[in-house]
Image (cartoon, rainbow, N blue to C red):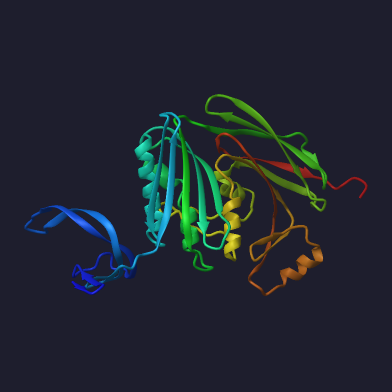
Length: 367
């Protein structure tokens, strides 16, 4: 039914979402399939002519010549094995519910159009998110998958940043564009942390501790790396726990070392979770700093207090100030029982495996 630019249709709900913002297009009907139960049409959409802004129990309603908010999306796929390259430009519904899911489907379809669906793939994904009145957000990660493409992409968290931004608790964000650049290699670029070892098993506060790490690549190559961690001058006597892993397993390592997690829990399908953030800028900063799957990470867990104030970690505070903060009635001030030192180094592999050891810190000589 049409009354001027007002449109009513269906006589039943579409998705029963109430107030909505869907595109309304013309359609070309190819054929009608009759059925004694429910007859239906096979049709292709044509140009957009308006928007659907109501989705109620009795039908849908909308307006002609008014258009919904859509997010421009650019997807570039390069398959080095097949020497194939393709770029896709599309628009996605600006919806907290549908945008992450639709973008995930779009990326999946784009890869299917260029590369294979089954078998081993190492994929380098670069994502750029442009928001209104904010600096561009640039994210990059390396993924490896040996199962089918759909399980691989859904477990990779590719659209998790979109969901976290859209469903953030600090305020609405306006997406101007989302870009993906995906490079596919028909090979397995993985390595495992085989061993970690200390050059010296004892240290003093303020010392530079050298940690050796042995990586074994799937190709059989063995690589030894050396990472240096400088202990704070006020490191207490006792045991410092040290561990190494790939960026994708950092949350497990932090739990093993008795540290609070710095990244969100991951849940399948929606890939949701919350960072320890108290404003939008802090949320974006944590997203950009998150370790990648190909990062070799070394973490030292130090037995001294650290203060968390509105998500900002404060280390090396005077003992008197920490005692004052312990008595604070402000729930935004938290005293953490262990402090963390972290060093990350990029590699060419997706890193797996976790190794830990103990470092003995003794009282500094002459004190």
